[in-house]
Length: 306
Length: 80
Image (tube, rainbow over all chains, first blue to last red; front, side, top):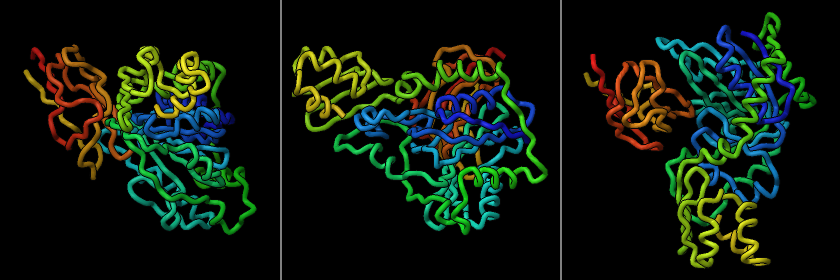
């Protein structure tokens, strides 16, 4: 196994790097470690509108990204260490979560943490989750990645997750909330920094010394292209949401791939309804479209549409 | 010849999976090795490939449907 060091905190670039290594580096198995600046990260088949508080997320300017693995929505910040294993997956003996979770659990235990596997794919201390994991399988390769909550700010997440009294109907994969804790609180040596934690993890996984693979400038060009053409696009992050309807009282909107296809809102005029059809369902976008019609009342009206 | 495509059992404890996305549509010509659809189960997204050449003549589920393991999800008709 080789280690690829990632030094960017750009979620879009880091997800593009993962996919690039997963699809192109098939000669060996790889470990990647990276941290992201504040971001909300969704599972591949989730409905973004069902998961996050769209007005709050748009106003905050937080990055919203969709990954290629399954599962639910997580909040990332610089106190969360992400790890990715990319490996061969023989059809006759497919790898399972345990193949990737236990090296990490063992490393945590060596640091004095009472880490346990919980459910199929979590790591917990007691009842509190410290790591959520997910995978993508393509041909004979598997990408397994997970979070490690070292010293993350959990409060931000709660503000930006979905809170609505409207009913959303869709067939998307929904998140399962879990109580979480930070690893740092449970360390004997509480002076350990994220850098120390990362080094301790690496030296446990590579006991005989780290074998590195460096990304070349040609690799980086392709990774940046993948970021720009996929991970940092509205079409991938928002438009990939499965179709759904949202309704509250007499209001009903149908959204297909992020576009408003049906709009029944008694509180707005037929002119406004026509203006919304075919548009991207986003908070700032609806404010922009309706403000010429409703002026200072626009915000109140748009708030009713989420 | 008809080949029934079923929801695969991708791990020892998998009982059902979400047919997350069709990569081919009804009526499409498919080749062995082409990705037919993606399944999500236990936070794993897996590609399911065609094992024969032919035409995808039937699909029995929509994207987002949860399907029990071994249940037919599609039919491929081939000339062999």
